[in-house]
Amino acid sequence: MSVTVQKLVRTAPGSDRQLLKSVSLDVPTGHFVALVGPSGAGKTTLLRAIAGLDVCDSGTLLLDGQKVETMQDRARKIGFVFQNYALFPHMTVARNISFGLDVQPRGSRLSRQDRAARVQELLDLMQLPDMGAAYPARLSGGQRQRVALARALASGPGVLLLDEPFGALDPIVRRTIRSWLRSLHDRLGLTTILVTHDQEEALEVADRIVVMQQGLIVQDAAPDILDQSPETAFVMEFMGEAITFRGTLNNGQFVPDEGGVLPFPVAAHLESGPIDAMIRPFEIGIVSAGNAEKMLSPVSVVSHGARNGYRHYLARLTDRTISVSAPDWGNDSINFAEAGVLDISRARLFKNGLRVV
Ligand SMILES: Nc1ncnc2c1ncn2[C@@H]1O[C@H](COP(=O)(O)OP(=O)(O)OP(=O)(O)O)[C@@H](O)[C@H]1O
Picture 1 (cartoon, rainbow, N blue to C red):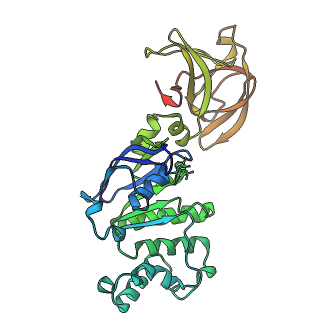
Picture 2 (picture 1 turned 90 degrees about the vertical axis):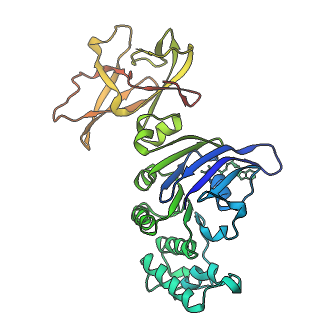
Picture 3 (picture 1 turned 60 degrees about the vertical axis):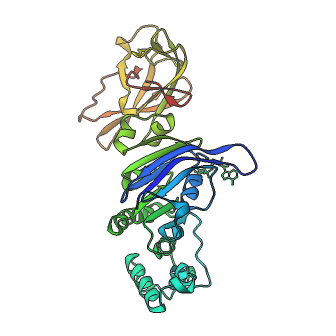
């Protein structure tokens, strides 16, 4: 089932602050989208709006091209799991899963046998075949989370909305459950939107990553595009370690504030003024101090061992130490003494958090 959001606007109750500022999003049937962004960006607000838990001021929401207001059984088409999933402690796992089915009006309710069969099918799918009679207190965090997912899937929804569902789990369980979730999504032909703060999680499960900031979608792209062309400083940091150099754009040159860093020319025509250069550790070059301009005070660079095919260095700037890495060719590939200057000309430039070059 496809999800289409068109120009959705939601204002905070009792104020004129816009939590969603004309958000549009298209998630075709079968796609898995990760929704990421800094805290307060509006991710949960968007998910709640799609789930129908909150009303919006304006905009349209379509499921399979049909306006949701005209749907009678919208609730059944959307399953959701939030971080603080609360299973009913006094009900068995089976009752928890079938709860939504049990409270359906008599006319549309499945028979008792059909509901029991559906619950068993879901328990099998969740790899908890013998847990139906257990109470939630007996389950591990990962098992409870799978029961919460089973409950969300009980009515056979086409869309699954997940808000930080694995936040409370330890990293190893989290890793196992997310690859399992992706295969579940594929097997059931679901359309899934997952809110996560975890870059590794987003990259592993999602076909597309949608980045929100201040109530807006600022980038919506496949992971490799986000990596190559981040539109905002947040995306640059989200996609991997990034180091920021503050500086000034002056007559087509980036002039760093810190000593020991080489200025570099900027091809694009931009207004002079303060600007941030952001770069990945492996994009930084180290130039032997002897070759650098005399005026630049060289920084001390210390080798910090080799890992994952990279040789790591620590460069001591005036007020901070940063890590720099270079492919490890088996010898000390950067041939410097103990001093060098940094070449950051591969950096991307950001003004007020938005990419300009
Ligand atoms: N009912 C509400 N009334 C007023 N403000 C609200 C309401 N719900 C959310 N907000 C505000 O809307 C903004 C977006 O909140 P939201 O929970 O959607 O962010 P988020 O991106 O999910 O953040 P996080 O990653 O921290 O969960 C926040 O500034 C929040 O304080």
